[in-house]
Amino acid sequence: MEMKILITSPPDRENLVAEIWVDNCQLAEVSQEGEVQFVEIYPHPPGGAWRVPFRQLLQAMKQAKVRLAEVEGRVLKDSDEPTKG
Image (cartoon, rainbow, N blue to C red; front, side, top):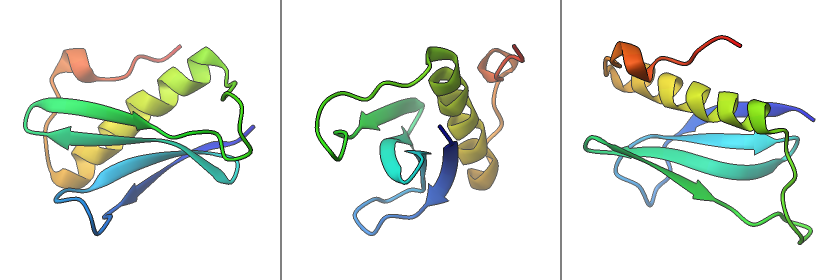
């Protein structure tokens, strides 16, 4: 299972978003509105539920948050940095 993060600029959004992809399907989108981050989770394309390793998903969401902050030029607090594990 391959997870990747893509930074995109959807036409229906004011700001950039970080998309989380599993293999060739979009699982989620991470966005920032003011000081609040949001995660939109999309349905699994063939139906049923997503089943992904917890740590891998958690790391992908942290990575999405960091990459989004980097491209937007925001500085994260130390408590916002992902931990190695």
